[in-house]
Structure formats: C-alpha cells, structure tokens
Length: 491
Image: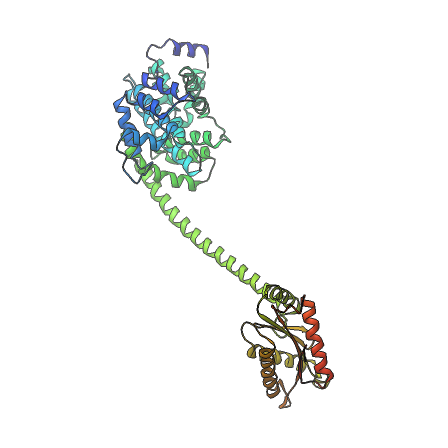
C-alpha cells in the first residue's frame, strides 16, 4: 500500500472501527479457554445481536426440526466457534454502516457482502468443508477495505467505483489510481482490528487473479464473483457468470446447484442482516435454465446409473457363469474332479455324527462302445448316463465325472443300507433306459459300482483318501467278479 494512502486512512476520523461488542467478541475468540457462558454474557449486552442469532438459528440454513426458543438453545446448537463467528459478523455489519455522501454505494457493498457470505457458506457445504460459519464471516468481511476507502476518500472512491466496468475491473482501477486495492486495504484494517489470522488472509486473497489451491480461500474468492453475478445487469450477466465459474475453478453444475440454494436462503438471511437484496430477472432466467439442466443431468445420471447397474449385473452374471463353468465337466454338465475333491474334503471334515457315503461308478465295456459306434456316440452315452444319475439322486447328493467313463457320487446322510438302495435303483434305471440310438437301434449299458460309508461315530476312515481308496477297492471287486455289480468296502 502506498504511504500516502495509508496516511490518509490513519488520519481518517470516521474510519470504520469495530463496536465495543465486536471488540469483546474478537478478544474472546482468541482465548483458548473461552466458554459458551462467557460468549453469552457479551452477546446479551446487545439485544439486537441476540435476536439476530436466534433468528438465524431458526432459518433454512440450519433447518432444525424443533424451533429454537432462546439464545442459550441457539448457542448450544451452533457451538462456541460458530456463535462467535456469527456474532462478530452481525456486530460488525451493524457497527460499520454509516451515512455518507455515497450511501447508495455503501448499501451496494453491503448487499455484495451478504451475498458473498451466503455463497461462501453454501459452496463450502457442497464441497464438504468444515467451519461453515467461518466461511460465512470471511465472505461477509472481504469488502471491509471498500468501506474504509469509501469513508476515507468518499468522493474519489465513489467516482472510481462508478468508473469501473463491473467488479471484475475494480481492483485493476484501484491499483492504477490508488496504488493499492481494497483487498490489501481490508487486510491492513483487519490486522489493526486484530481479527483472526484466517480472516486477514481470506480478505487479502479475496481478489487474487489465480484461484487458491486451498478450498477455504477458493470459496471466499468465488463468493464475491457469485455475488457479482447476482447483482449484475442483464447486459453483464453472461460475463459475470464466466468470471464466477473461473473463480470457482470448477464446472458449471456446482454453480447451477448454488444459485437456487442462495435464492431459497436469501430472504431470511438478508432480513436478518437488515439488507434488501432482490432476485433479479436475469438470474431468474439463469435459475430456470439451471433447473432444466439439473433435471436433464439427473435423468442422464439415472440412465447412466441404470446402465452401470446393468453392466455390473452382466459382469456378475458372467463371473458366476465362468465360476460355474470352471466347476463343471463340459461334456456331461456334472461337476468335475477338481470341484468334487473340494466338496468331498469339506463334507468329510464337517461330518462328525452322520453317515457319508462315497460311490465310484464305472461304465462297463465303454471302450467297446467307442470302438463300435465312434466317439460321438460314446459322448452321447456319457451325457445320457449323467442325466439319469442326476434324476435319480437326491438334491443333497453330489455327482462328478471323475475321469473318462468313471463317475463319483457323494451321498450325504446315507449309511450303507440306504446307499445300496440308491445305487440299486440307479442300476435298474440305467439298465432299462437306452443311452443312444444307432440306426434306430437302442444302445444299452451297465455299470459297476463300489462304495464306502464313513460313520462319524466309528472313525474307521481318518482321511478322504482312505475313504476313496476303500470305494475304489470295492469297485475293483465288482469289475473283477463280472461287472454290473455293486459292492461295499465291507462286502
């Protein structure tokens, strides 16, 4: 800041200064041991301040389910930091309003301040930032430098403001004619008032051309541009919108969301701050356009989400299919040996009190079928045999192709007697069912079987391998003694 400008500000008798309540709040905000009780004592000194806090606590910004009836309830709901931030904002905005030759410009600055406060708070909420009241206070006070300049050099600054083509060019004109800008003056003034450091820095950075990487300060920078969009004319609205988007460092959707939110909260907030802010016609058109875009965007999101769900379901179904295929024998459709080994191991280890039977089935003279009719007929025989087995067994039983023409059955909850009945029923069914037709002549087959039953109580088998070996030995006995027979490991 130029020395001459600083000297002018220092010698200005009516330079804005915080009222007594604000000074006490500033002091309390810097006290690490401050309490809600101490804050209440200060706020109660100013009935108008108490009423404003109570009104804001019941406003749409907080949307409490129950109406807040007292200052103590409001402070308890808001918390100490939020109470101090809001109280400081209310006390300053009332204390710094004064009558001078540029009352219209001053009112415009306060309108911009209230809009900035609301925009900063709502944008911070949308971005998931904490300290919404701190954002609101920083947005509210970012133009205190303009108020100081208006008090120190009222005529000159009013003419300069009128000369500027919108807020976007104001800082450039201030730099050119005053050697400084209102953001720098505001930060200087905030230091003299001993405001918290974050307010000083937020004010100082509020008009930076480059968007801050810090989300908090970026909200403050964007809030002023959003306020300018609200206060723009129909002729300058498009340029103001572009500047707001540029300051936000984001795309249009967030701005489209913020504008209706500001419109909804503004009547209550502006009344609380004793500021009249209208809803301009050009913004009404923008809001309607934004609403239409949001509807279209939501529909697109719904469609995208539905498409994503369909893709996810398709992928899930595909994975299930691949998983199922990896467990199945591709020719017969029954389980393969690898999966059956897993099943058998699990069933054997969990079977402690009930019977479990393993049966090995081998198609008799299957090589003769392949040699006589060909492998295609042989494949058809295997498929038909597997289907008969599946139809005959219970749903709790499991069947797998264990290799070539050999099948493995796991019969749950089946002792020796019931297992033998199942296998005999299967043998009868196979003997009377043609497995294929060759030259209109049926092809019949038989099979040999061997099984072993493990009773969890007797502990005869200590491993799956021992159980399988017993069933295999029984199968070998059936084949050795003439095939088309069933033997158990105890026979």
